[in-house]
Length: 427
Image (cartoon, rainbow, N blue to C red; front, side):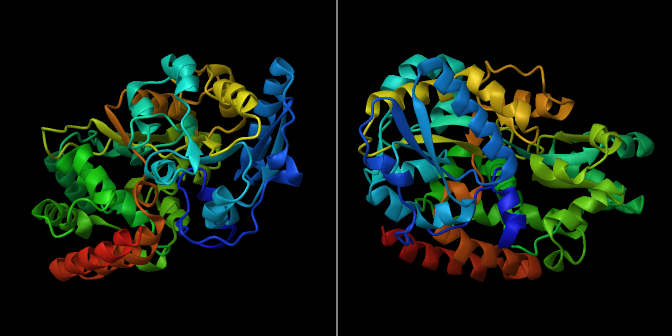
């Protein structure tokens, strides 16, 4: 999704940039990446939007006040940063840089373009729940990432609508289906949906996949290790086909914002989406009426133990000039104090640490925080949990093909598998 509307979402979503594509324009700030000044740490930032830029700035100011070390911030437009990250990290990057948890982090750790930070985690480990710790490790079992903020995907609804019609929150697939049918009878759109920009459908796929097949299979499939022609994947689309008739009509021509407006106007009953949907609820009364529940259980072996929680944070570059200062900064960034500063400035996200001060949280933030903290496993959304070139060039069009013609799923899955083998073989 191009333009400012996509950038506005990147805090909650992550872009679909090609990791291997890089134009050598993104470089260390003002030569600071080549500086060995012990009182300065250089930092490459992708937080170009006004709200996060200000919030991060407040964190760096607090760190400087505490440590006496200046943070020299090199901010680039979010999309540009992602498009050029590969060549940036192979050149002379800043000491520390913003990035994403999970597969996106592991990709660069495996290439040797980031430094392990186990020494930092020895000090900050107690600040994070087990699922967040797992999310911060490379394939080699070492830590490479310090998480700061996170959001979540769930099923959003309005409390007043559920109260008006006497609906109960569904916890199982059968209850979810029954609720969809009842909403249709009540002349509501059961599931708001807009896939004009091709990425929202990936969220629905993820929810059904890890509820049906579990976290481990989700990770293997996204990493190119499991086959898209596996019967387990076919079962995901079979389940999706069951609820597809209850999705909003005309979704190929509708943006996520337009779909959200049907929830705002009480024309739709539910919306499978990220917590940044709250951006569309512009009055306090509407926002106070917004609520969510975890996507229903499909397979009792996995229950509702996995939560999709895209997480942003920091990594240490391959050869930082001020390694000691960078370690001090990362240690501070992994503290409840740093996270508390951020979430006071940006109410669309929650802290990754379960020790952070939540006193400034809205009711929605508190609930999101509890769900994320209590999860057994956390996923990162398809375009963060897999190669972005695969998700943007293969999965987005493939899912739209399915949505247009669900009966053609076998040929769609065969096509995905063929293309996956080529892309993942390219290294």
